[in-house]
Image 1 (cartoon, rainbow over the protein chains, first blue to last red):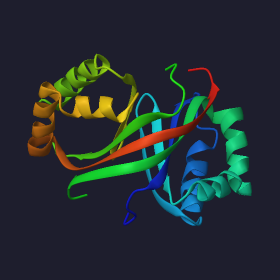
Image 2 (cartoon, rainbow over the protein chains, first blue to last red):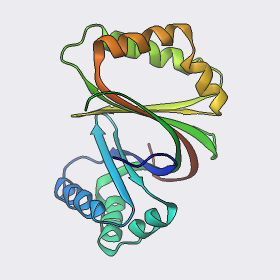
Image 3 (cartoon, chains in turn orange, brown):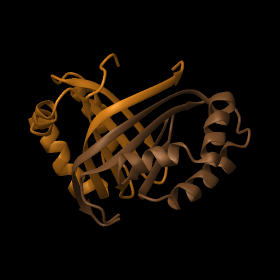
Image 4 (cartoon, rainbow over the protein chains, first blue to last red):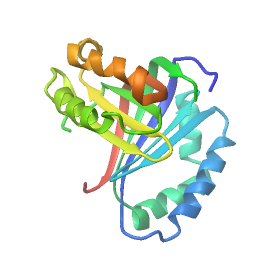
Length: 103
Length: 103
């Protein structure tokens, strides 16, 4: 990701319900869709007891557009109904960053 | 976590080297130590191909104090030498948050 701060991060921390119920398929689809959105900068995800997914965006406007994407709205609805026991979503301004080593 | 925005998040995204080399023990120790620092608000961690750990703080000053904690400085040194192939650390201002369901 070439973008330097300031830019935005959306931290999405989740506790899943039992079972897949189409989650994995939708997660792959949504990541691919997010990558095509204007202002998308990057995506990181990991899961242990909780899941943490962070998406990076050029602006609040880009985050708002992604939030209101019609396919994404459907995924959000299913998320509440079927996949997530709990989640917390935080909109953050990335002010500084430091990097070490080679990815 | 009772704290409402604005507060700070430190997103620490990592790619590990092979082997433990004392990492797990230090990770537990550092989490316990962080929790005792002034201004600490919370911690979330998950690992898949990459690791994502997010710590939450009351202020930039609290983050700076934690960065310069002597035991933490030693862990940071070992991190570069032994545990991490790559990492990226982002200092973020949490502007808004939304929560769903019960943790």
